[in-house]
Image (tube, rainbow, N blue to C red):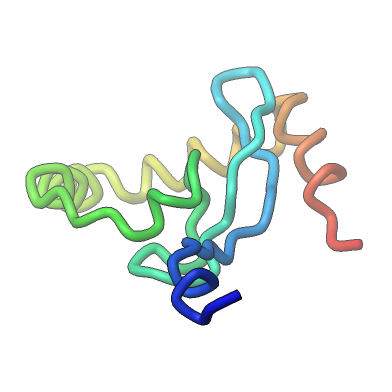
Length: 94
């Protein structure tokens, strides 16, 4: 086996985690490398996607307007939503 054969394989360093999508729980991946290191994405290949500038500016504007409200709402959801409570158990470090 030549080194070039081994080198052509794409290696993604991503861990499997569970995330909430509405009221259901789905599998996602946490990026170990790339631009989105530490973020949860649907596919490991998404860790290396380029930045969508329009979405970035829209989110920055929304956070400037409603940042505190968004935080309060997210906190309440994490406390009250049954799916969020299940996530704590599923994603607990083993």
